[in-house]
Length: 164
Image 1 (cartoon, rainbow, N blue to C red):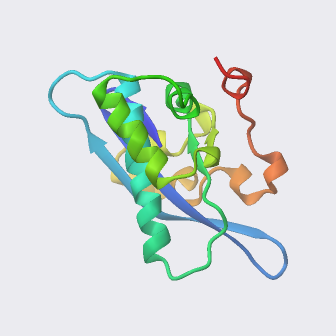
Image 2: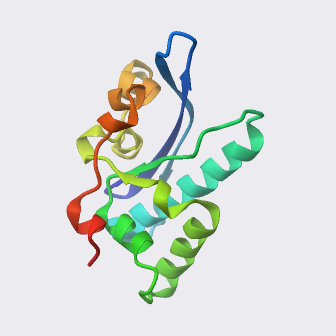
């Protein structure tokens, strides 16, 4: 999931380990939305994208007739990760409603950090043309690390790991 300017994007991939132990990853569903007309902040857009990602992945788990490994949700938003990892904070209604939705529909431990430059969901929020999407291997196949063992995945930033 990602947010940029006045829009946000969410994308889901399915990684499959085949007989030769090779991991294949492909796009399952992507969604982009333009923000409401009233001025909104990037952290609010990122939190909205996170809520949409949690709902979309919950629906995918229900709709796909497959036995799936635990879900992993990637975000480039440190704000979202800090909201989710802090169970004692009190938030404004907008933030509180979205954090509650995310906590209710996903495992907080499944949320991970990915650098903005490696986040395919940001492609959906930065106004690419349809042709550019169709030619983007990042959008269609996900980041290369998704095809690797988990030990090669990006790590969580220290300030999220150790708390506030």
